Length: 240
Image (tube, rainbow, N blue to C red; front, side, top):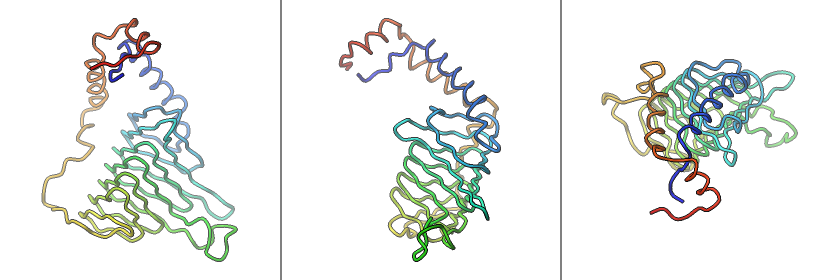
């Protein structure tokens, strides 16, 4: 089966429930969550701990098989903190875990299965608890972290920079570069004078992005009937 046979009316009902769930349940897991969050399968997102904040127009694409995980750990002396700026995108399977602080700027994008942790969680010699093995992470504005990339403790990634898929970042990354490899090194320079479209461009008019997405869904599901939907569930067949 290559087509989504869901009737548009059913899709609308799902969207209304999703919006209700985000506002009345999902939002309460954050210390602060800005306006117009768009979260796919919000019930699958795993959020643990306090001091977790996100700005306006957060876009999260989660899934039961690949949930997004945001975790801040606390002990008697300190507590982790996660701050996510406006207009950020977080894709399935991404894990962000903090023992001290992880600060993420505006317009940042995280592809599938990214991993950020500001702690090693166990010392080389004291393996009973995290002791002197945690340092803050700073992700500056408009950073793009590719599929499966990992960012370790104490790292600062500069503005507009890109971390290639599968990279392991253990050292600071300057502004306007592409890094890749293990450990990640600079493989390309970006032109800081060249105009760059950022995610915030999609949200210049309040509600416009959601309306555009609804129109795309309507066009994709146009003509679907309840009968064809039920048939696709119980009697799926190849659709060329």
